Length: 290
Ligand code: GRG
Image 1: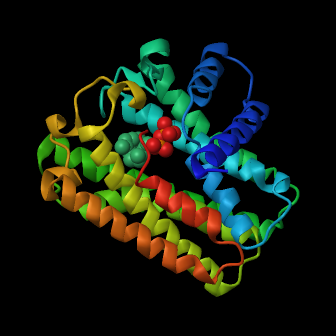
Image 2: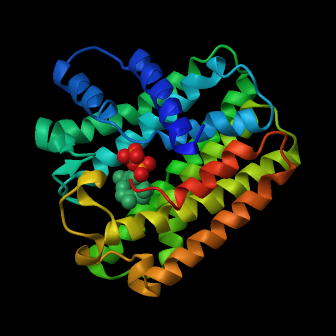
Image 3: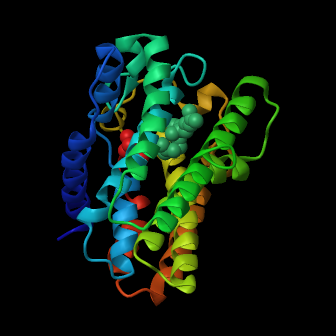
């Protein structure tokens, strides 16, 4: 099976599991907003990476850790809702559909994002199959990769550049906004599969390299991608004064840098029991159209 088809199948599995974890309650509008964004599509690459990293180290029983994979998508969804807000990217469309704040209003969209984030950690805390010390490590990795030393820090740096021109370090932005979350997903998979030190380090490095490649490719798609497929018709990053690889290095050099990161990622995980699917995912990242 081709990797694109395989990823589609895995995303369908994740979608089924996400549906099982969608919370309900009052006020209905808040819960509707969370469900709306959770079910609006997406590649589900972060949960897939958690599961594939675990499989690469030899874990077979994936069902017992899928809730943790689902939780990562709750966090990703929160970040997208907040990223689309008028105070941040001010986008009307996400994945081809009206953004959360466009449908539910800004206040509810902010709260839906907040709710998704805290509920993600609630889901993880309820896992019964993984030992408490391992769950603690998972929580630490996820909070670290998505919080002030990861995604939130990177997003702040990105916004400071866009709105004030006061932050000019693209490597910092890419590393923190995108790579650290992806890295933590790969490391979480390692922890959940009882990886030894070397295996965990390899997956950590793999995650970092594909995370950087992923963001560079995202910048490239923003320049040359099909708006219809990408599901957005708003201003390009370049027009928003965002720091992007193509704006600094040009398209060809950016592609070459992304390719080099992918090669590094592939080599890192040669020591694993089953590295093949992760290696295919690395290659897919710099060939994807969405
Ligand atoms: C608001 C704290 C906060 C963070 C926002 C996710 C994010 C950080 C910003 C979105 C803009 C962007 C280009 C971020 C880089 C990471 C990225 C490429 C996100 C999009 O993730 P995909 O491609 O999206 O996995 P899908 O739709 O497939 O889930």
